[in-house]
Structure formats: C-alpha cells, structure tokens
Length: 489
Image (cartoon, rainbow, N blue to C red):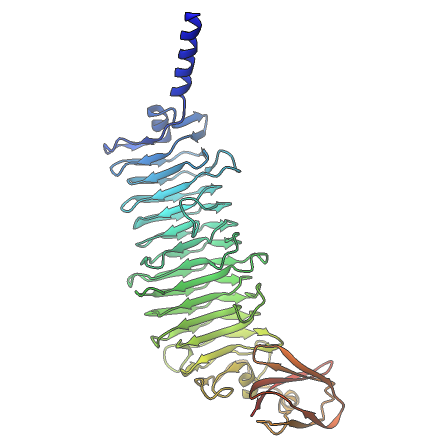
C-alpha cells in the first residue's frame, strides 16, 4: 500500500513538471534560436524535426534576440502569445507560423516599443495578429491569412508609431482589416506592392487599410498595392485616412488598384498634404447605397485647408466618381502644377452619372480631365456629369475647361443639343421630339426614379408637379440616350 502511494505521487509529480510553462529569455544580451529556448524550457517549446510547438507564452527580453534563419513550422497553442521587448528576426526562405489547432487560434504577437522586428518569407495564419508598438518594424514577402482578433482587434497589422515597412506581402481573408493605426497614433508607414483582398470578414464599417495621423517626414506612402474587396462584405472600404483628433496628415496614395470595395479612397478630416495619383479605382459599389458610400474618391473635411491633389487616376463604375463634402478642397487639374489627366467612366447611381460631385462652397480647378471615357464630348456633356454651382448656386464652381476626350461629331452633337423649355420650369416642359425618343424619365439628385412616360414624335408637353430643386430628365430610345438637368422653381 505504501509503495503504491509513493508510485502514484511520483507519477503526479512527473506530469506536473511537463505542464506547459511561460518563458522569458534571461535578458543577458544573448541571441537565441527556437532550439535554444526548447533546451532552456522544454515545457515551453517542444521540437520534432523542423516542427516546433509553443505551449506557453514566450517573452523576449529587451536585451535579447530571437532569430529564425532555417525553414521550419512553429505551431502555437490556444491563446498563447509571443511578446517581444528585444529583437525578433525571421530570415529563412519558408517559415510557417500557425495555430496548433486551427479552431483554437493563438493570441498573436505583441512587439513592444523599442523592439526591433524584421520578418521575411513567413506565412502567418490562425492567430490574433501583429500588435506593432515599436518604431522599427519591417515585414516583407509574407502571407497573413485567416487571422482573428487577439493581440489586435482593429487590424491584422496594427501600427502605433514610427515608419514601419510593409512590402510585397499578401494579406487576405482576415477577420479584421489588413493594416490599421490608432486615431491618435502618428504613423508614416511605407506600404508597397502588397496584395490585400477580402479582409474585414467581421464586416464592420472599416476599410482594408485604415490609418490616421502621420509624421511629416517621411509622409505616409501607400504605393502600388492591389486592394480587392469581397462582394459579400458590403461594409468594407478600400483605403481611409482619418484625422479626427487633430494632428498632421501627410500622405501619398499612388499607383494602386482598388476594386470591388464599399468605396475606394476616403480622406476624413484635415490634411496638411495629400496626393492621390495614378490609381485605378473601379467598381467600388458593393454596398449599393449612394447615401452611405460608393465614391471612388471622397474628401470630407470640417475646415478649409490645403487642396488634395487628384491626378492621373482612372475612376470607373463606382456609385460616384469624386465627391467633395463639407469644407473639402481639391485640385483635379490646373494650369501650373497639376496636369489633371483623370479619366472617368460610368460612375453612376439611379441612372445618373456623377463624375464629380462638389457638395461644398469651394471652387474646384479640374482642367484637362477625360470626363466620359471612350466618348467624344461637348461642354454640355461634361456639364451633365458634374454637380456644382450650375446645379445649386450655393455650391462652388468646377472649372473643367479645357477637357479631354475630344468633341462630338456633327451628328452626335445634334442629339446632345436636344433640349426642352422652359428651364427653370414651374408646371410643364415642352420639346420637339425630332429624334424619335420613346421614353422620358425624371430622377432626383439621389438617382431615384420619380416619373416615367412613353412619348411620341413631334411636339410634346410634359406636366411637371415637383417641389423646388434640381432634377435630371432622361430621354431615350433603342439606340440613343440623352440626360438633361432640370431646375424646378
């Protein structure tokens, strides 16, 4: 009986010492590998060939470094975390960091202020993201997918300060946005040549890149990325730069492809310097409600400040092309520093095209742009796709002449010169239907169809019973369509 009891106690003691333990490196200035940690604390990391399993929380002390320079897999147990005060480097050709059980994600990585982080060629999945509190952070040629909330809940890569380098990565199908920063964090990230797709699976009202205030030098740079939305995630936008708490915003957004999001690019709050250059911004209309989103580019500021420079962009098939709100100021092309060269096509909602909607009292320079792609245009054509002082005297004028995309032929120009009278109108409009239009429709400025009527050739009178304001009247047949603005007084 006594021997049995002693044997049982010994077995329990042996099991106890095998229970996973948290481990902190000794803070003596050494450089560790995972094998070193496994040797120092076998209950924290176990090893089987090139597969390592982290069973307890691991902390790298401020004077220590951990280096992964061979190809391996690191499996991390449920809710465990890697915290780095010192240095963490991954510099192998193929490293996998994932959950021990995909249904039980680990907590993620927390990189403390003053830590030194450099991660290359790594696949990071089924964890709680990267909380980047340090000024010195680089991640290159990595894949981050299927990550959830953990050390971060705002983005897979959540930034706090400094000039982090995020280059050549694939960041896709994560619960939260791809890259973010806190509202009061001054971060000038360099975000270059990443493929960002289908993030924000939680479908919260956040974009895939969600950043705030910046440093002045260098500016925030978002360059040559591909940012693709998931049509089932109708709350997820493309890029947002928001300044809600005060601070500086210096940003360059250039040569990106932004497609299939709730909106393309938005700048909210005042900016010191913002340039939106040479981007392809298409089909950012997945939510479908023009009152809640759908702009290719949206600028919304509460006070007049430096102009946002918008040049060389291709803006197609969004609900709106460019929208300016509140006190926003923008320059889409002038005679000196901005060549214009923006191209617009089919940015419409409710059957009405809105290439540029200037919903501010500020004048806008918008010269040398192609307002209707693949169509030779007249000044009236361009006027019809721009909303400004011509439509509402309280708004600022858009100076769009000269414009690109040519001039209509004589025959097409004749159709474009079709008109009705009087305009402004009180109770009825009159027109001579010499072009054999078969239908006339009236829309409000939100694109809602208000009336539709079949018409015949010859002289026509159409009764109007609408409240004061701006409307759009579309005349059409099987081969031709023309839309005209109508003021009701």
